[in-house]
View 1 (spheres, protein in one colour):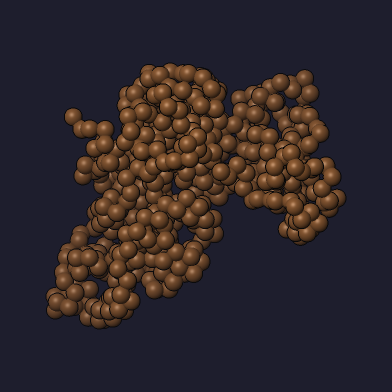
View 2: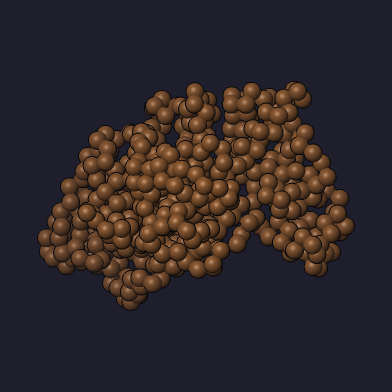
Length: 536
Ligand code: GDP
């Protein structure tokens, strides 16, 4: 039987990020197909299938063909146990993606070869850099006309501020796509598709060495010459693949390929698994020291809560990233924030669309715990005598605000319960005007679709109708001063600035423009403002 540390060191846990339509789903699916985890294409996300329409609010997914919720996929390959944390591509749900990244040890950034770095990639990338996790780049859709690879690398470096190390190099693109040159083996892997290959068909790979006359035949004389020039340039740059720089997210190994035609997916997976980190040590804030993932005691934190997946059961699943030790179904554990013991009664892992009960899991894995309504995002669970506590997950700045009021004032209880539970789940952020009650609540979201999900869920799950009044705030800042040393009501602020409080009692200000933020800091020299809440 494998030892605890063998089990843990075989884990590779990562998230895939991309701008919508860059090919994240296709790449995920190809990884699963390739490793034999699924048999047919179209099982992941299933944009057009009704299979995952398990509750009302997911109808929004169906109607718009977008993925709202993250799922966790696990498969084994070459002795590695791989966990892919899928993330919603739609920007309105990027907060969910942010949290998922907190549970990942590495990220794969998928970029459309024709479009380069897009808005959403930029945003998600910023979060990756906050965590200093390794970032791998997959430049996709080379079977379509793509931009010049040097130009793409330069754009990644300039726009995202990360250096890239091409692991392979494309030969042409679109109709002229002939394959990739693997810089390590110094061989060409030729692409023999017509650009419209069946999505599940594997394109033939023929290997040949650079400079060999047979290459002229394989990829064409001109391509061969261009490739030799390109490689000379790349090699001339002289950079080695600096693994330390990769480990802290300063250098991104980049791969070129075409997920749809299954080209370059296998070499990518192999290299990725070789270079990707084993489960990292998260910090125990109680002792301010890292927790060894291989220690015997189990511990983990909640990074995502998904409620009411099945309307008949009103169940709630708390997804826990295991940070140390081994999880066993039914084990006794301690919920740190709730300061109480509990039995981790149910564990589930997500395999594509099916939820399967898991009996055991290890550091690096994700388990879904049955949640009777006690967990909040960021909570720690642990076993053993010595308790640990993991850092809270930062709250990211909402970009849109509305005042939500219940229509039927008799339903106040359900309204408050619904708003609080949905905020606990992280579906929205709620704020209370300082000095006001809960009859109306200010809701902050990253994207307008979150408002729609909120309204539908309140109606379907809590039987509450609400009115939404858009608010003009655009900029939000948490007050970081010690609460005892600052008198918030007497701050000197522009008239349209609002003083509010978040769910955890944090005090903050809502502004209608960046100009007003500057005004506040100019007129209150001691005021310390931060764009993120709860950063520890
Ligand atoms: P996501 O939104 O990032 O998950 O993107 P999808 O994987 O759903 O892909 C978006 C569209 O791009 C789909 O129509 C895919 O078939 C297509 N696509 C994905 N990868 C490739 C590729 O390598 N080549 C081409 N030509 N199309 C691709």
